[in-house]
Image 1 (cartoon, rainbow, N blue to C red):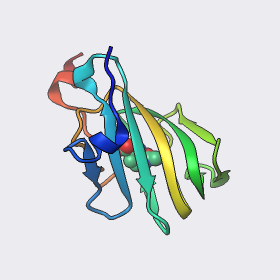
Image 2 (image 1 turned 120 degrees about the vertical axis):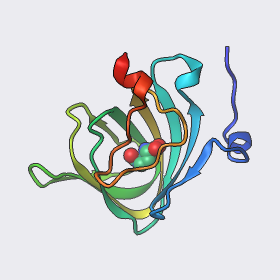
Image 3 (image 1 turned 90 degrees about the vertical axis):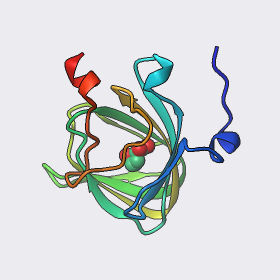
Image 4 (image 1 turned 90 degrees about the horizontal axis):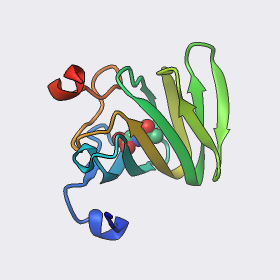
Length: 134
Ligand code: 9YT
């Protein structure tokens, strides 16, 4: 069994601060743990309004605290986010995320992240060569 603590992980390189200033993500479970998914606790900064398109990953997001909205860009539908809301990007949906109040989110990624990823110009995470070959 693996046991980790968020406060402890926040003091390590598991904590990634996005260069765009929109979010901070502490990656509690990563590819190297061989679980087939990664698990992160992410803070979306108040006022953040940005687009993502996880072309290489499926992501599920659960809101623990805060307030915002997610918009699917293909159809312009907006979904309010409050504590308890889950959104599931089962179609690699291109989306915009907005935080009206700072949001704390639990995020799961399949395939798992290696740990250091930040968004590329399309709002995606690159796959490493090993994952592409799998
Ligand atoms: C909710 C979301 O997608 N935020 C961006 C950061 C990402 N969840 C991550 O790397 O944990």
